[in-house]
Image (cartoon, rainbow, N blue to C red; front, top):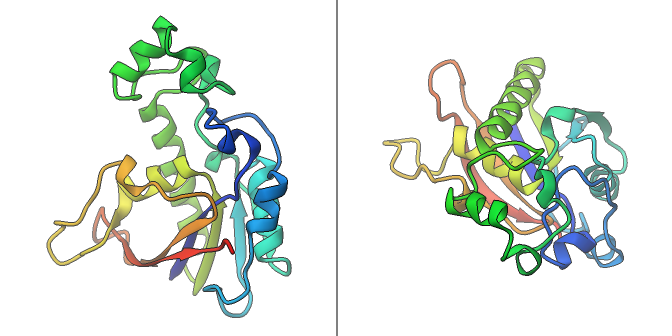
Length: 205
C-alpha cells in the first residue's frame, strides 16, 4: 500500500508561530491560495482521504483531492497544548509552567492538555486502525497535522529498511505546512518499522 501522509496548509496561527492544537481555525487566505495539486504526486483511481476532526485538514483535503471520499478520524487530531494553546514563545518565555515544559524537551504533560506520550499513543492507535481497515487498498491519503506526521513517522517510519540505521527522532520528521511523505507501507506484522519513505511531496505553489 502506498500512503500519502500530508500536513495541512498554513493558518494564521502557523504564520504567527503560535501553538496550534485543539483550536479549530481555518486555513489562512495565504494558506488556501498556496495549495495546489497541479503537477504534484497524486494517487490513482479511487481512494479515501482520512482527515482529523479539525477544519484545517478537511479544507486542505478538499482543495487537493476534491473528488475523493473524505473520512474523519478524531484520533488524528493535533496535540492538545492545554494552557499554551494560541500563544507563542515570546508571550510565554516568563511563564514558569511553560519553561518547565520546555525543559522537559516538550515531553511532559501540558497543563490542561496532553503529554507527548499520551498524544503519540493516541495517534498511533488511530493510524493502526486505519491501516487494518484498509489493508487491501492500493493507495491511501491522510491529511492531518505536523504532530500527526511526527508521531506516526517516529513510531513506524524509516528511510532505509536494510539495517534500521535511518530511523529518526520525533522532531526530525517535521515537515512544513503543505508537504507530505510518500510512503510504502510494508507488512506491519513483520516489523515495527514498516513505513519506507519513497519521497517528499510539496503541495504548495
